Amino acid sequence: MQWKDLKSRLLAAGSVNLIGEPAERFIARSAAGPGAGGSGSLFYAMGSHRVKLSLDPLSPIEIAHRGNGTADLYLEGKLISGRLLEPGFHCPDQAYITVTGSCIFKCRYCTVPKIGGRRKSVEEIMQMVESVRHRIHAISITSGVLESIEEEEAYVLEVVRRLAFYNLPIGVSIFPSDKTPEHLKELGVAEVKFNLEAATPELFAKMCPGLDYDRLWQTLDRSVALFGRNRVFSNIIIGLGETDAEMKACIQKLTSHGVIPVLRPLNPVAELAGCPRPSAERLGKLMAIHGQALDSAGLDPRLALTMCTNCAGCDLVPGRDE
Image 1 (cartoon, rainbow, N blue to C red):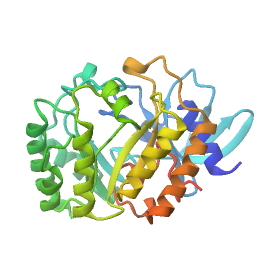
Image 2: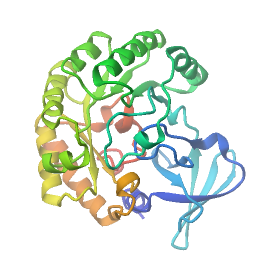
Image 3: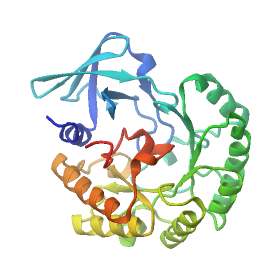
Image 4: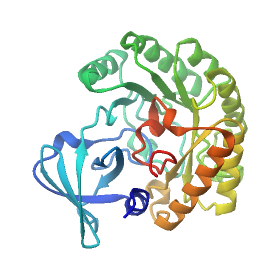
């Protein structure tokens, strides 16, 4: 079985039952996004390929940890040998840190507003990075919104200012204000990700009440001008009710603007808990469309230094998962 076919099937399932030897040091926990507040997840790797799966004892897919990261994946009667990856924070090779684990916005697919997590201090974030400094090549920062978009940005800017001490590429993904790209560029941030989330403005309005779709597009365009091609990204969730044609149009519009789309399979939680995950077949079909659009625009996800596209655990990434 080719890796992209295996990964699409694993992402369609979304979870795995972990058995065998103790594996706590291989378990990642999320403080932001749809995976926040869950029982954790793991990264399973074969060669240079990897996939992130949440932990669920009821999952039909099983991974047996044999010790020291060696692991066997059992899928539909087949045994596939691989290994578990030790995360820095949230993902392998990076300190991917959520600054504020709560949010005033109530996007329908996200558990963060209900969890109401706390804000980390700047010193705490510095200590987190220091604790994994020996095994990371990048720092990535994301955040909810504690009081307002502007107040959150000011706090994140101070975090980024302090993290410059480590002289590592820094990627940032936050809700943008009018001048967010400019402020981040001034601080030497390498890459940015501003998330459209939904393939159409109608779905965005339905899923993310109170947020501004047009501002996101304006922010993305300014970001490409500032940071350059292959340095600006945007999450699009697969499975919010969009058609393949709508997803294709969104992918092509993003790539034509110099933005690399991050196609994220829906994790059915929060208000969307009853929705189905996208099928393996659909994920594979959209990956092909994604790859063609990137090629046509001369964009290469393999050049990503930080954040989701560099990790490639949660999504099918053309050029990485072939």
